[in-house]
Length: 262
Image 1: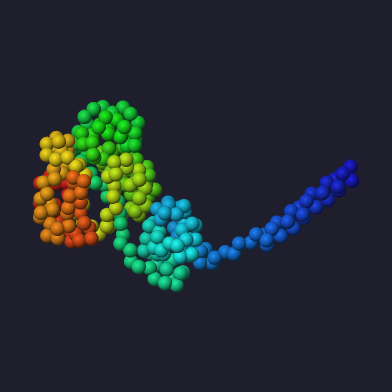
Image 2 (image 1 turned 90 degrees about the horizontal axis):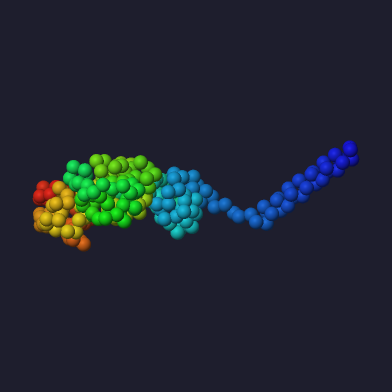
């Protein structure tokens, strides 16, 4: 009995010793040098792993920056403060990047639109697009309001207010997940400093627009004609702003008879 216990003890000890020696040798053979800059950059990143930078996560972005395959300001969550830290690690400086945020191009809330039928399907924008007219809303081009974008946002920066999605630009980090979640393509990037936005993408004209939404754009072109910098043009049937030239004078808002510029 004692011999059996002793044998088992020696056997287990021998196996443990063999495994330890094997792992020690393997660690030397397969040792991968750690890039100190990469480790420091990874530490400086916020750890959100949101993928908005175009990489699978913060570790992948850190590796790319350390190798010079990504800019130091690639992290949209950390923005300029993180970019400055990474630039210091890399021995350079970070260019001041223009902050961008999301904007929902629809202002046709429950008071400005109606429901044309009772929708009993799954309350998902992606599912509602297969329903008649793309959902029950009287404007088939407007925000469905079921909140696919809200679910996609990890930063609590977008909410459904009175039937439409509205972005809180102070919380938005421009991760673009809400843009990908919107089946109607209503969400775009706009400069944080921009003061005016066109809240309608209905390409129709006249009566169909007026009957479907109280603030729908009728493409009267008054906003474009009234812009002193001529930075509003028609694209795919509706006006768009050239933010690079916009001076935020708000004259387009005053010229718009439909109040769809906000």
